[in-house]
Length: 87
Image 1 (cartoon, rainbow, N blue to C red):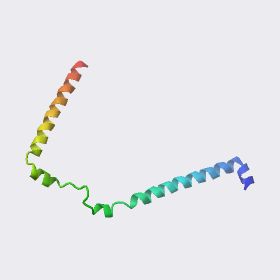
Image 2 (cartoon, rainbow, N blue to C red):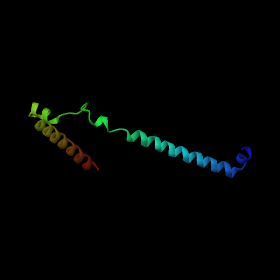
Image 3 (cartoon, rainbow, N blue to C red):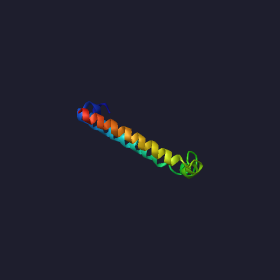
Image 4 (cartoon, one colour):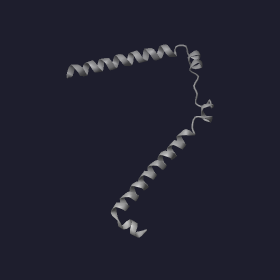
C-alpha cells in the first residue's frame, strides 16, 4: 500500500476517485431526501387558506385591495417620472 502512495500519479488517481465517489454519494443522498416529500403532506389541510370564504366574509376586500394597489402604483409612477426628469 505504501508503494502505491509513493507514486504521485497514483495519489492523484486515488484522490480523483475519492472525490467522484463523494460527489456521487452527496447527490444520491440529496435525491433520496428530496424524493420522499409530497406524499402524506399533500393530503394535509394545515396551512391551506380558503380564499373564497375570506372574500365572502368581507365583500369590500377585493375593491379595497385594488384601490390600494392603484394608489401605490400611481405613487411609484410619480417617483419614477421625477427621477427620470433629474437624469
